[in-house]
Structures are given as structure tokens and as C-alpha cells.
Image 1 (cartoon, rainbow, N blue to C red):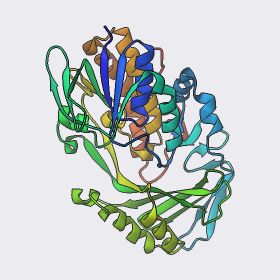
Image 2: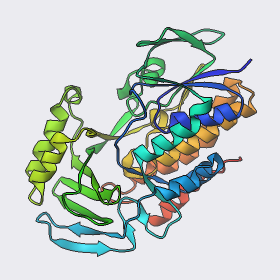
Image 3: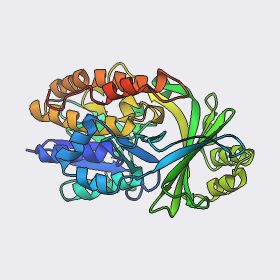
Length: 370
């Protein structure tokens, strides 16, 4: 009898875990609130040991084929005058001669989904609403689908994880605000950038702009310093309007950037925060990726933690032959030092990139076969 595993979250961590669980003989089901693989999002990095996970999945060459290919970047003052430039590195991906890979998040999500679809059950347009565990499994209620019982449940549903809230308690017990917010959205390439990024900081706001899709589109990452904002701002268009107003007040290209944010169908904005927990598991439920140990985009390691965590969790469950108590304990022992090092990348130098030495150590500080 196959061990059934419900995975909440169809981004990167969840489908990668589903892939490895299917390979190990488990029966994974992925439930995702969105109607399909989510589009949009910033460029993300696959670094260090995470590259080995991609290689073992047979996706490394495909990822290299769709990687971003920047020639360099310019740093601008608030009036748009260039004050620095580099043809050796960019703020988004690091050194351009690195073996690490930068890809658009939506490309990685699509790639992993297509690779896993043949062996994984996907429930799109639905979400978990309740968990009820007993000695034999976890009864899961869904917003739309009939209730079902699974042997195990994994929350891979991001910073604002529903599974974490249901199994462990309110988000505020675990979320640690890092003093800023990040908005990401797409636009036409109205700056005519040619494989070249631009970065600008003005007081407590700043942005990075990079061209994608053969220079036909832009991905704009806009950040601003702020204490935690009222929860009500996450509803409707209040947060979008806040971003639009802040962009409109900037000098260089503020009006066009504000207009792009106002119109973007893929608009995203959220707090820069980390999730820190004493344990990621409770009974038959465990957490994966941002749901359990979000390092924040400031670390540059969220995607790599998701890829590596999924591989390690599946490996631990396979070695324990589905005994979740043994598997979850081993998963935490193996992953926690790696998580701690990578979360520190976002806090060791607030407002700036981590040192090259600490970044290199963090991204490789775990063996997939330990």
C-alpha cells in the first residue's frame, strides 16, 4: 500500500518534493490555490548544492537554457545619472562567470510542473481549510474538493502558510519582519534595456530593473523600508496603491514605473520576513521551504532552500520507509544547520549583499547523501 502525502503549495518546493516522493514509491497529491502554475515573479537563483538537485532531476540543462544572460549593470543616483557600473557581476545574480543559475521564477515553476505532471496528482484552484489528525492519518478538508484522508501532510505553501497556521498556530508567532517590503511586477521594456540591469536607491526606497524575454519585457523589483503594515493593506488594491504612490514620488522614471505598477497583471508585494521555528513538524504534518524556514529574498537562497529541502525530506521519508517520526526528525537534523547559515545571509549585513565568502559557504554547506 502506497503512503499518501498531501502537499499544500504548487510553487517550487511542493512539486519538487512530489517528484522525489513519486520516485521513491509514495503517492503524492499537490493542492494549489491558483488555477494553474503561477506566472510572474522575480528572477531566482539556483546555487551550490541546489544545482545537484536539478541535475538529479534531469532539469539542469533545461534551466541553463532559459537562464538570464546579463552583460552587466549600472548603479544610478536618484536623478538617473550613472555612478557605478559592472560587467563582472549584478546585484540579482552575483558574479556573471559563476556556475550558479539565475532564471525567472515562472520558468522554473513551469519546468518543474511539466516534469512532475505524469506521476503527480494536482488539485488546482483549491486549498486546505482544516486538518484533523488521528492514529491512522490526517483528514483534510478542502475549500472545494471533498474531504480526504492522507497518511502525511506537508505545508509547502509559502510565507503565509495555511498548513502552518492550522497545525502550529498564528503566523505572528513565527514571522520576523526585516524592516522592508518588496514589490515585483512586469512591464514592457520601455527603457530599451539590452541584457543590462539598472539599480537605483533614493532614501528609504529603491529598485532594480532587468530585461527578460529577449529584452521585450522588464521585471521590476521595488523595495521600501517600513515597519510592519496593517494586515488590511493586503486586501484589495491598498498595497498596490501604496507602491504606486511611492514610485510616483521618485525622480527618475517614477511616473512610468508607477503606471506600470498600476497596470501590471502580475503585481506582487509582501514583507521581507523570515520564518523561524523551534520545530517544523507536529504529528504527521511537516513544513517545507518558505512555510517552515523562509530566509527572505534578501538572502538570495529561498529557491535553493526549497529545492534542497524537498530532496532531503523525500530522502528521509524513503529511508525511514514512511515512518514520519523517524523521517521528520532526520529531516530537521540534516536541514537545520543549512537553514541557519542561509537565513544569516539576510541578517548579517542588512541593506547590502552578504559577503562572498559567507555566501559561498552557505550555499554548499550540506551533502545530499549524508
